[in-house]
Image (cartoon, rainbow, N blue to C red; front, side, top):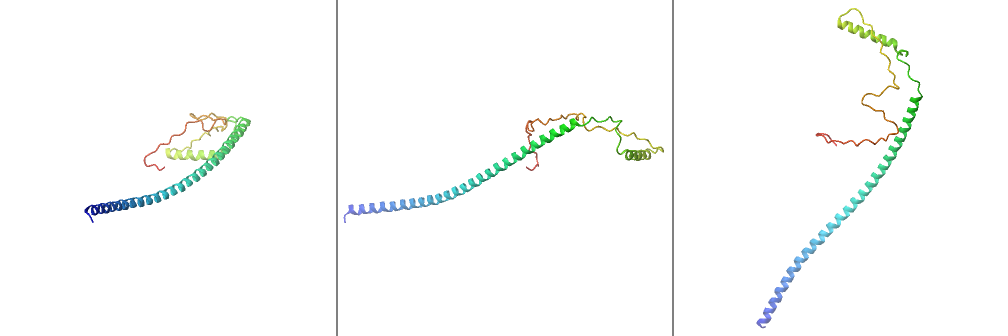
Length: 175
């Protein structure tokens, strides 16, 4: 064999060893790619399951919201009907009698309570004679003006016209 043939065989052997090294590295990378591809497939499957659960949850939430909306609308209608009936009853009620003409239902109990209070005050003040207590005038329940700072809402007003209430997060509060 000649020197050129031996050189060519050595060059060919070196190239084969280099090709084998490149092939082994490429095989390792392909194996890592296959493993990551399998992991990616598992992640996609889990994501599909989570998406299906989320869709089911949204459908359940939508159904619950529709049910709550229907129930609230029914309650609002019933409330407006009852408010209308109450308004008619109040309008049809006779005007209240003046306080002087109204008989006291528990007049005897009222007198006894007044006498007991007067006796207790007499003992506390160390006086001998009981003080007679005047009976309070009965206040009519219907037809009186509203308390200061309050307004009377009509049944035709929308229940949700006011601005939404802003909730504040306070330190130590659980939400």
